[in-house]
Amino acid sequence: MKILGLESTAHTFAASTIDEEQIYTNEKSMYQPEEGGIHPRKAAEHHYQKAHEIISKGLEGEIDAVAFSQGPGIPQCLDIGAVAARTLAQKHDVPLIGVNHCVAHIEIGKRTTDAERPVTLYLSGGNSQVIAEKNSQYRIVGETLDIALGNAVDKLARKLGYPHPGGPEIEKLAEQTDEIIEIAYPVKGMDFSFSGIVTELEKKVGQVEDEVIANTFQEHAYASTVEALERAMAQADSNEALLTGGVAMNNRLREMVEAMCEQRNANAYFPPKQYCMDNAAMIAERGLKKAKRKQFTDLKNSEIKQNWRPEGIKV
Ligand code: AMP
Ligand code: MG
Image 1 (cartoon, rainbow, N blue to C red):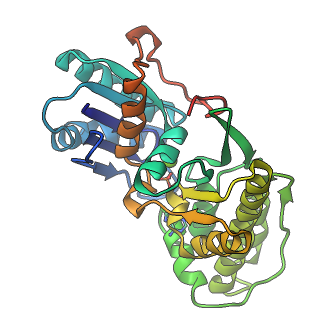
Image 2: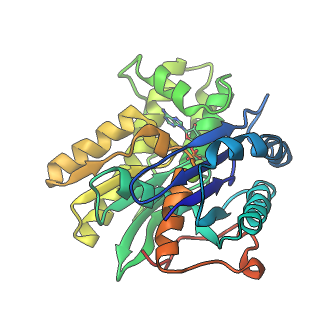
Image 3: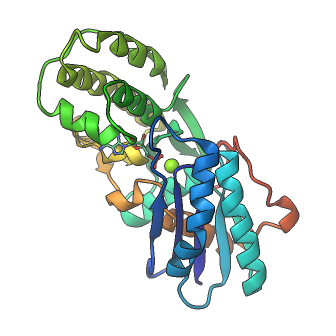
């Protein structure tokens, strides 16, 4: 069964064709803000300007269904993918499948690693969640109480004068020192929060070296998510951790997850980097699983779901 997947929740417009055996294409174009963070209307503009080119490259052969990111995400951006998916489904006379973006991150992780029933740490520009499986449903067992981790690192980087996305820049700076300063370390049970850390560190800009600020951010913010992940694994009695989302590309974070898993005799799984960032292969993969169970989306139910949480969705 061949599925075309479309992704457009935030900065990336992407198209991918896959089947059970192969990922044939994984095309994407990423919106780069000239200044500041993601501007919804400008990101949407980028998406409709790139849609034709990316879909032309990403669509491979005869397809059996079109899957698209139905949410959560930026409404203006979601709409571009949804309109394209509806049009393509009608043109090719195949069913439409609305997919939860967060669940798709987990399922491409399962496809591209040996993880079977992991507890997932999903850290991206717009979402930060610890997701476990219970009674074959995805459950959010921990999450950020304010902004997403990617959003936090991007904000801090902006304050230090680096362009979007800031995660890789903060990582490079942090690698240049072992020094940290003491700041708050806000973990509340299974939840974490980042806006306080960002505010506290923004106040240190100019007083403390940039490298130390970056390293302090990583050692506090990343460690707090790994602490929540560890607790979630203990509660779920799981020995598999899956790290995904754009922030999952961070090497220090991977080291922390690996060290935690080693101590617990558990396995840490990291999808290849092209499947950590937003991509369309993950949407097609989730679509493939839904197509096999004939879980299609009627046109009248295909409206975007800006705040669609993965809570309670069937694995
Ligand atoms: P996503 O929304 O899943 O595509 O992820 C985008 C986020 O990942 C942005 O906030 C980036 O700053 C962040 N990111 C990308 N690479 C890294 C990295 N090496 N370290 C930390 N964050 C990163
Ligand atoms: Mg994402």
